[in-house]
Length: 111
Image (tube, rainbow, N blue to C red):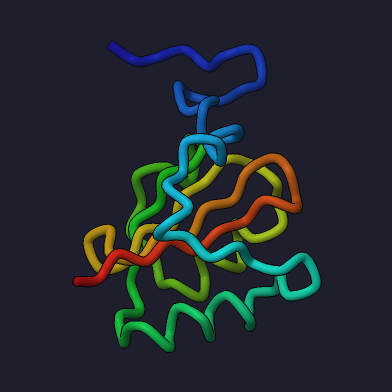
């Protein structure tokens, strides 16, 4: 059964837009508001891993559930202010963007 879009057009991931309050900030680094560019976020992720592929969880059905090149994913998602997760290394690294432009985080969970 196909899920119908909610009133904002999302497909069941409306919580992603406001997920920031659920993040465990012990494992998150806030992306500074003056550094919210593709090159900055990509450099931060590249400093942690050589992986260039990522998985997307996104409010938009067009992007949700796709595997993509990391840089391309950042270009498509960064700055949209739509709830999204870019998942790298099986969840060891996660970029999160919410509707609020000031709330972008990079979560890192390596042992």
